[in-house]
Image (cartoon, rainbow, N blue to C red; front, side, top):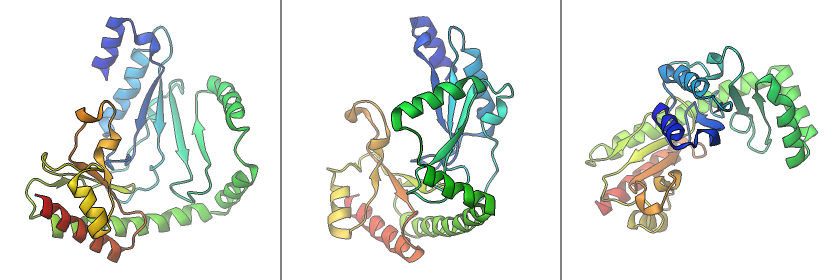
Length: 260
């Protein structure tokens, strides 16, 4: 990041940089989190390169509360002690109800007015009914209880998916996968010669013959399609029960083995 920003300064483009966007917890699609020692470094870099204009860090912490094990990581916002450069954004759609499209942000004081004005222009404000429902739930203690139960459920399903992957993929040479500490996703990398895209043999056979679905990894990269990695996939354990995850992973492994 430091090298990129230095390059922008050299080319005269640093003034165009207004925001550094970071998904800090259990990101979609890899399930990874920004390491603790890099969090403070990102905030320091934003301040270092705020020269002609302020460069803010938008910390998208949508999955923060879906924590199952491993270290508890501090927010990037906690390192911005002057409360001048980091915007912390969270949502209730991942932890309470996807249909209640409501979230919140903690922003530098001087940005509150402009942000509210812009939001009002875009959507006339979030629905009062939705906000009232969430306020009642938060005040009554139901929210914390719900999140705790949700994490227990997702932890079991994550373990079920990882256990199934261990059983059905370990013997397939060149296949690697991540082990997330939270969130909803497992990231898998296949040997480079196996394409996971929609038009590839693997996807077509998985969907049509085995009725299993994954999201091709190439969809999560920027740039021309032909320059993106073509052998990765995102798996999700958010919907299926443990038996369904076991069967789905078995079918997927069978399909991968069939195209190797």
